[in-house]
Image 1: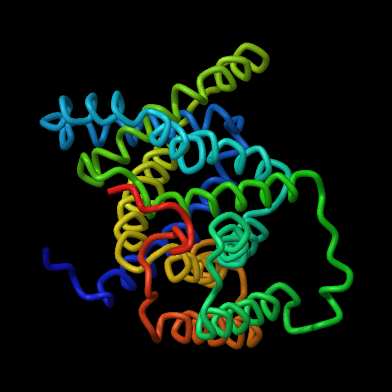
Image 2 (image 1 turned 90 degrees about the vertical axis):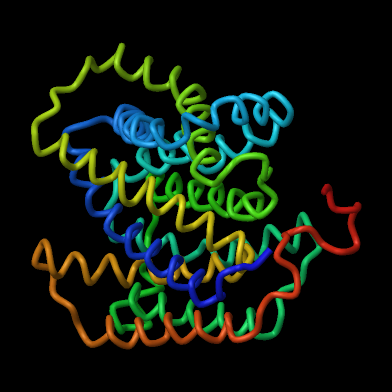
Length: 312
């Protein structure tokens, strides 16, 4: 089977980072009008509705896939769909979109840690160098060009919820490499979205019972539609394609681009100023991503060669 060039996968991962950068800004604005679990539920409901016409012909295959490998699909749904989105939104409700964008940048480090601790996979020299250079770029942006500013950073419980959401996503990225291949990628996203909504339903129901059903304005509806179709649906497909082609570590490095895109988009759409430290940070982040991807990963699976045989 012929695979597309790796450059196509890298382009897909860059586009994913740009969409995620826009998602942080849009979601933070919507949380002023909608509670976290409700927003997460509405976001994924729209994804299901949008995908249904395209995956309907695979309905028998999807039912068989879930029946045969329910545990794997359920785990991926918990890690990468509605429940993870809800966790992030609970954190985002009490902090800033900028911090969410920045915390996305710890995902590559968390991926390397997960692979090392649970799969016995050591990062290559290029991966280690690329992660270090990109992390330095994130630190430059986080410190606003002043290294001493890093010493005074303080994190609230909401910030820690965001960090937990990033850890969950790191596990999802690792497991996504091993997703069952019985159905197409859009069908897989549909299954994950449906199962994720089922897992999320008790939380959303309790939230609505306590706070009531929110009023959804036309602007909020447009915001939900945007979040659902681009940063969620399109980004899920692009990210799944990228991970399958280049592996978890090299795909994860591209999340370092999220705060860069978030800063640029905030400057364009809400008038935030860009400074020289943004440019310096961007060059370091992009440079680290390039270094990390100079050599193809020897294994596209997260499984270590010393472990049990790979399931066919």
